[in-house]
Length: 329
Image (spheres, rainbow, N blue to C red):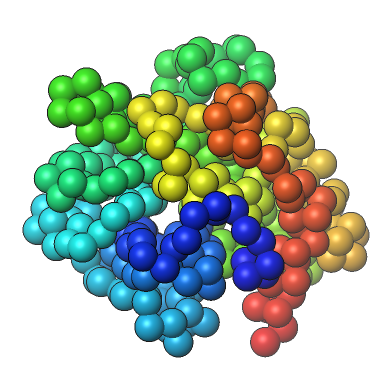
């Protein structure tokens, strides 16, 4: 994504310092790229590199404003030190994946709940001007309301979903008790360049590109009718930048495209882009998977003038260019 040609801020960045937890990850590295290419005074990355990669930041190391701090959000001292001389915090560090959380709920809770508390306490104590954080569409659980609206959620279907709901509750409590307000975003199935295609917990789009480029059958859990609101990472960068620099706070917003695509349709699109004729290998459905997911984005559109500038078709074409280079290099 050529972030130097996209402008989603309306105030100068030259006097502003940013902290991105999990900034070496897929989403965080894109936000760092936007801030650095638009002249931010400082962009500090806090990452333990368990899921993030230094390679995601290599193309940014020529920016003097980039500062990489190896540390863990489950360590209170690391969080405190990371807040020094910072104006705005974008908290993305977490253990993702529903299946991972079912296999290891303790690790998920430790990173996502205890880690979140360390970050928000450190931000409050440091007098941070604005903190935003990543929640998830998984919070909607077994709700049958469609499209998903922020005020109507169901019961969590996984430890991961519960952990993200708990971060929202902690953020709301901090607003009432400490007058420290943080804005949360329920991201819906974000995809794009630098999303890791390897490992047991890889997301579906990088897995599909990997399979297509290696001429292997893609695995689909269930019959392929599960639907998701796939959201290109540039849309997430847009809202994170706008929100950090906004006075609006203490609210939860959906961030998505407002379009529904089934997993089977997704494979057919990717197969068409890559030129694959392989048929999927259907596997039994997985515990904790939400069957249908479609976002109502009217609230984030109204409050932040958000617009899903990159739809799934264009986003997949851009993403293909990344994976094609990755697997042909």
